[in-house]
Image (cartoon, rainbow, N blue to C red; front, side, top):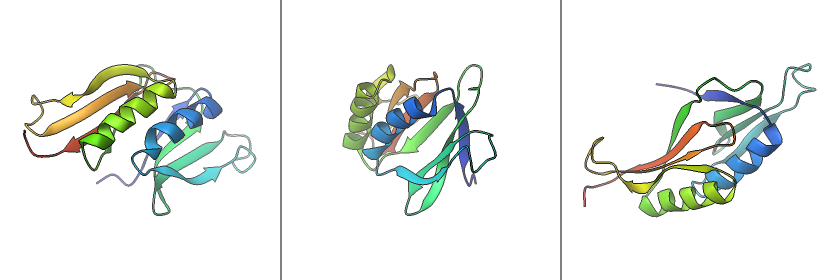
Length: 130
């Protein structure tokens, strides 16, 4: 349904350090870089994804008031746990430790971390109920 999504970040260098660490454990990395020179002074952008396809973009600018929520698919619960640890070590703030969220559905296992700009970043595995 959605081809890609982008969010503005206040400090692209700081955001890159956070997202590089947090998303690497999910097999997601920078697939494309657009420099400020390439945009004619309209900010720098980084496209994260897999297999050469950037699906998630961050770009220098004024972050949305109130933040944004983006959830990344994890292959298993261990990857959700690893995401949370990596994101916290990279400067994220806990917004929901790894665990089951049966209010969404019985097998929903997720973790939530606020990025340096306050965006709610999640890793989720839709596995079987325990």
